[in-house]
Image 1 (cartoon, rainbow, N blue to C red):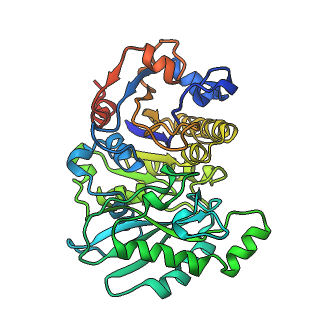
Image 2 (image 1 turned 30 degrees about the vertical axis):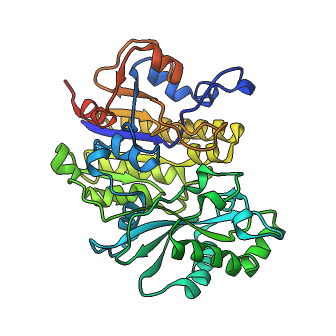
Length: 401
């Protein structure tokens, strides 16, 4: 038996008036999920433990079977593992987004958070901007490391965990109340704006109608993580397929394999075919028992507040990932179990994450059910099946009894 998770990041949502009171998941054209849902168990799962913030870090740990209350030590340290950042036990890793703040006259503190991803800037251009800022900001106790797209890392040597605000939580708001209390971090953010605002790359981006990547924004700090090996924990040899450093970092920490797919960028137009090929190859040719296919696009479209693009992201997930995965596994003659779910909701109305339950679909190619469900939030609730502790869903998925 092979085990495949397809994780549509932030795919769950609220009913939307413009969609006739339906959610993007129930509105989207998803023939592959529709077919599978009629043969599957449908239910709801609560992935965010009580008292913890709803993030892709805590939520994906839950989905992978790790209780965040036991294993979570911060978001950025997981990403640091992915990009090979050396961390001492006394280091603090901090996520460094390159964001878009409003321009014009007035003090830095009065600027608005326009875009947490700077129009999903590509890694090549963003690395140049990060280096321009880091060359003037880096010191013995502060070191910058390039990640992917707008997502990078700051290591604070012998630092301390301090409260920091995710930029996607304050889109459209004045940044002053959300700047770090730590004076050095706050000053570095302010100076980065002065360095980047008129950088040639940003002047060119504005000519093209793209948001300038004009400020470093720090958040998600934490200490070096310690995860139990996924194989020791489950008895399954696992592979991660994701464009996002956070997910790759969880995999590295858990001793899983990490697929490197060219053109996988975490955006709406990522290399879906390459991700499918890497996932299927892992479980049919490379000796892996388990593969986790993470698709970031629904979450990004939720943060952008775009109903249309979120629907499109879900339709792409169905057409370009789920359909081909099932087809290729059936063609290979492999018995498999398939788990489809979001990690958390990212409602387009709020443009940030919530802690609400999310729907899951669990399909077994050897024991197809006859339930007649459709896969969405409403029918997940109607099923009457609810898993309160998200990390227990993985045990259910891997248990064939």
